[in-house]
Image (cartoon, rainbow, N blue to C red; front, side, top):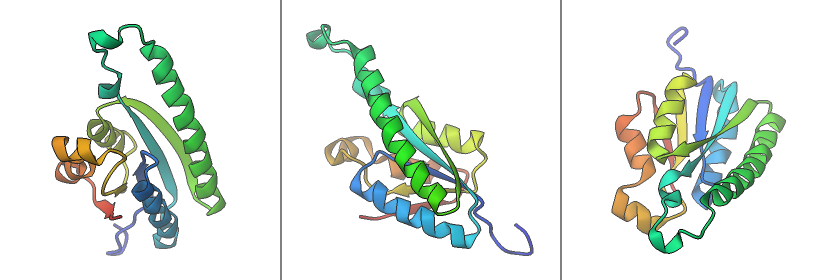
Length: 150
């Protein structure tokens, strides 16, 4: 904090590319006016979707993961380009794991001043069962969290 002003210089923007997370991107862009300088775009490949039940033992999960990573990188590059057009210093990270844990880990590694996250992800049913990713991030994050609703 400089002179009593809260600065959100380093932003973590986790995204699963859902509608609400794309809505959150608009807020990230607007934060440039509030002193934001750097944005880390984070996409987490949920390792739980890569667990192999016996029935699917014929599926090449490495190939599935590689495909998810490729699609994720493509989308992240587009988001980074949009943020750079807005004058923000942006880059992306693709991680694999439990989404909320990876978000918390990356927020510490990148020493961010704010996490901007959508209130609901792609899978609403899964979130009702597991508790939403954003809710867990809010409860456990050591940094302020801006939650963007649908």
